[in-house]
Image (cartoon, rainbow, N blue to C red):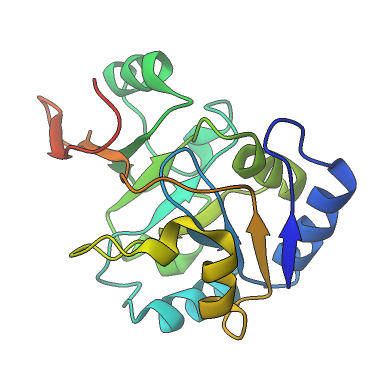
Length: 200
């Protein structure tokens, strides 16, 4: 199902409907401040397993990232040093993924991973979804690491490709092509492991 939502003013009724789909273990394609992404309720283990199967990812070995609404409840999901918190506060919301040690509230599926990527995108739809859901979203970008493909920016083409794999594709307008900047905050000094759209 393709659902049009205007990023300037996301319709709360539509956002709530999509949050209910996420609560039920659904997968949703949605826009961010970088590229379109596939997301699910990060605390729903069945949904996380489903998204990992679809993307051909082993959750025990692959880097997993979550989207939070803001930094207020971040300490439940990741361990944040003072220095990391200051850096994140300066740059979020924004096109960054900060890699942090895993915290206590994530399901066991994550605990075998020592770290988790954390995003707070500067995009009203993504943040509204997280806010309505009340949990972080597990997120995986739909761009291919090796190449940029036109369909990944056009919601209608994304829908054609993913309509049988996900429950909802949100059309929030054309997406970007540049991924987030990834900053490893698990060691000091912090290290940029992928330069993307965000500039520290």
